[in-house]
Amino acid sequence: MKAAQVDKLYNKLTPTEQAALAFEAIARNDDAELNVIVESVERKDYRCTHWDFRWRLSGLTNLASYYAMIYWKTRTYMEVVNSKYNECGNEADQKAAFVFLDRLLAMEVALADVCAKMNIDVLAVKKFAQCDNEHTPEKCNDEELVKAYVGLFMRMIG
Image 1 (tube, helix red, strand yellow):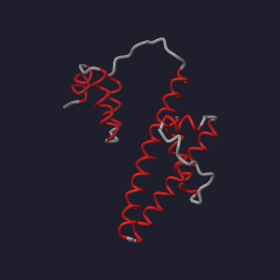
Image 2 (cartoon, rainbow, N blue to C red):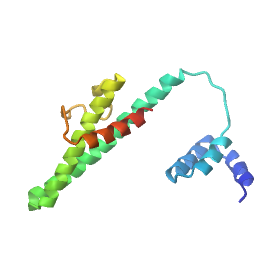
Image 3 (cartoon, rainbow, N blue to C red):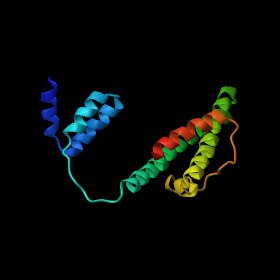
Image 4 (cartoon, rainbow, N blue to C red):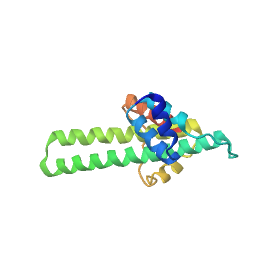
């Protein structure tokens, strides 16, 4: 199908349908299709809160959501391999549990670092993520992993 024909099809979709297609294009890393979809979205003028406010609030919500997702996923994996180790005594399971523990420590230190740099209450982020009763370590020995998480968290904020 020619680009002009595809563009006409996108114009007939609702904004919700366009957003779903845009999300799929992002997931496929298809910038060309994403651009066509975005260009087909109707333009409107709105009176709303300041862009910086909305952008930061959205970024903080993304940060807390992303942190929660990777925190609980990592914590679950750690508990599973630790349980396997306790049942079977397999050293590979114990090593895997320590890898996940290192990740948890790194993300906690990184979150505290990012929140301090951005003047954000780390406990507010952790409360949003339902991690406010979890231990927050002072340091992590894997500085490269901490750096990686700092980069991820900073990108979430925008």
